[in-house]
Structure formats: C-alpha cells, structure tokens
Amino acid sequence: MNALKLPLRIGVGVIVLNNKNQVFVGKRKDNPGDNWQMPQGGVNKGEDYVSAMKRELIEETSIKNIKILKEIEHLYQYNLPKNLVGIIWKGKFRGQKQKWFITRFLGKDSEINLKTKHPEFIEWKWIEPEKLPEVIVYFKKEIYLSLLKEIKLFIE
Image 1 (cartoon, one colour):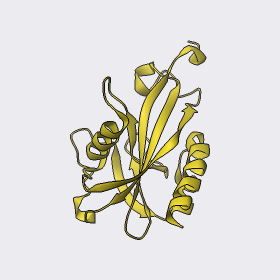
Image 2 (image 1 turned 90 degrees about the vertical axis):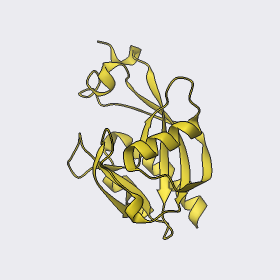
Image 3 (image 1 turned 30 degrees about the vertical axis):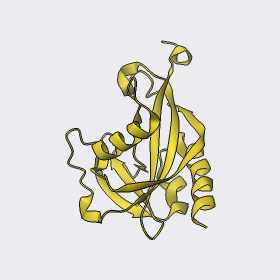
C-alpha cells in the first residue's frame, strides 16, 4: 500500500485552558506509555469545525462548559509514522489536517469524566503549556511546538 496516496483525515483539536492557564491533556487508551495529548478528533460529513470540536470534547472528556477564545487561522497537518499507516483509522488515512481552537474551561474539574461511551483517554491532568512538546508522541511534536506559540501569544 502506498501511504502517500492515502488522503489526510480532516480533524479538529482543542486547547482547553483552566483559570491558571494550564492545559488539559489526556493519556490515550491505545497508547498508554507516557504520551499525552490534547483532545482532538475527526470532522463528520456536513459538520462545521466548531460543532466538531465541541462534540469531540464532550465525547472524550465530558467537558461542556467552555468559552471559545480563539479559532487558530492555520490548518496543521501531520503524517503518521509508516508503522501506523494502515492500522489507525481503519487504514483510510495517512495523517490528519486539523483546525485548532483555544478555549477556556469554565466548569469544575469534577465535570471532567473520561468514562464516556467510547473512552479514548485513561487518565488526564493539567500541565503548564511549556510541557506540551515534551509529553506528545514524536510525530505530533512540530504541531505542538506551533500550538505552544499560539497559546503563549494568547496568555502572556
């Protein structure tokens, strides 16, 4: 299979900041090493980016109480490493092209519940934004470095 011929999956990502400007990250169920990521997921057919972002956030974390602070202009993309192409997303995509949002969490931590209908995370925590590039899987590191610049512009 030629991975380069596979399309990119259209997705969204969400940076959730608490009132201390820490970022929500979750440890994925399917990659339980010490890798963490911000909530993200695919856009369904006919769905706009904002609706997809809110849906994914609820599906993965149960978080509903947010305020959108910024829709990041740029679309970010990454390719999966060769060993994951053909495995993730039923082999239909070579990577993702994502629209990201910066949001403020307005609820209490007790609202966060990972035991959703189709759980993706097994653990979660708030971290300082600077830690993001250190906790993500290596093939998304460049995106997280770029997102960190966006976060810093916003919170400083």
